Image (cartoon, rainbow, N blue to C red; front, side, top):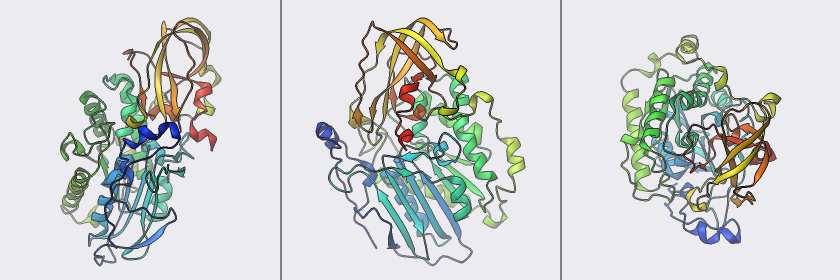
Length: 436
């Protein structure tokens, strides 16, 4: 069954957002015909008989994959005679930890778009879709992010293709500067647990292809180079790292206001080149000659860098009481939020406020100033930030690191890259995940 490609605009979630949201051509539904949210059985395009010993492919992706990459890549593998079954899950706003059962992501849900395309019997699959633009004014609901451990056990794929990385750019609040001794361990804490789980979960998995981000116009080249280099250093011994910046030229022909998401022919080009790279790599040797990654787990455990205590991610609710920082501080600088259409399809956004410390009431803090990230938008609703420059406030804070807010889209114009960002404990529990 062939489905015609469509282009459409996103509409308002509420009346006061209608004009802003019309400008953003939400990409997550590009190339999809609107279908009911319930799963449908679809006939494959030009089905090719897959051998009984054919490969099973699992594809995971974030919002970039929802812009057309995921569907195109799924189609290329689904129509490949070497492939017996393809399972694709695309969840907006995810990072590598989102796909794991570990806290604090155990019950994480995506609120900005979800698609799955799952093989059932030969030449058929089931598709579930909930994305912007399925009907006028439609905003996706909440969908649990599938867990890697369950997918490996139930689907038993031979190959895993992981498209991710763009949301890790939000670990760099000023979008320009890298602090290796801070950002290196932080990135490692997002990368290594995923690969560790992939190789230690019993399954027929033999190859992992890690599709790193294409060029982003939202952050500096220094940040993009660092993230790729860190990815190669931390997990390149196990996963094949694909640098997507070499595959599709920038600027993109149909680019969204965030200068990161895009649609159309460039997406197809990116997916086609990734498919070609994977196909060429698989052709180099008989697939059956490759060792199961689960059998290589002891050796891999030695290869993977051992996370240090500071890298371990603890759930917000389990943070020791002594990690609570309570201060009296005067607000001296505020970052203004960007327009909604510049962070869509995401629904939350943080802004940085700088305070001068007047007194440390509880906990330890040695700097004269402190950077606090405040939610400017939650669920696309603008928050009332009634903080005034020059006024002193009593703040109860946790480090932003280790919270679900860590990879939420953000902006900080302070330039104080030496300061570790904090978040009010009252704001920490306002993340949509805490409501579920």
